[in-house]
Length: 203
Image (tube, rainbow, N blue to C red; front, side):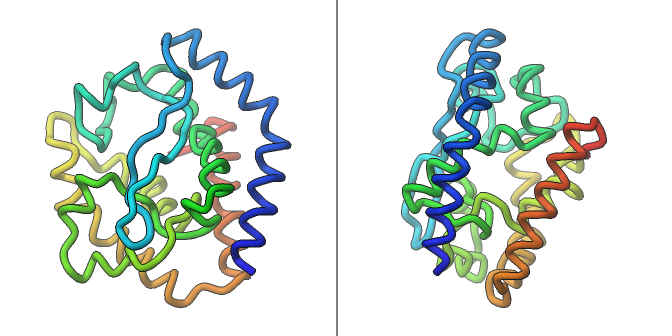
């Protein structure tokens, strides 16, 4: 049933959002020449790696000149990229991953391999679940954690040492108890964050 819902959401989302995709892709490419989409390596269920697609929010090849976790006022983030991140519009291409089965609609955040390599053994339990486009850990990071990373520190280290454990705990507790109704509420909560970002009231 969950896979059927994912397929319906993926096909509907890609069809309805295709005009927006074209506009955003053009704006991204005009401000910062290069591919407007970014396929970052992420770790999914069972430790399988895949490419997670987003709109590019940083300068070209940013992952080669800085950490995987972006800190406060990261100079690699473009002006358009800052808006896309605040509104979560940058995440919309993940509907392609939803169609492919890399992710589900609601689930834990898919992390980069370097971060997963630093999981403790109990934290690796999260890899038993399919990552999601939206999820409680992602919302918690967006609304409570992402601005905690101080300027001038190693963002990856700070994230792993201070922010990762509570976020993973929230995700693990959620996926062990979730219901279709809690998933629906999570989607609505994420839509609310997007709306606040569009209105300039995002975190």
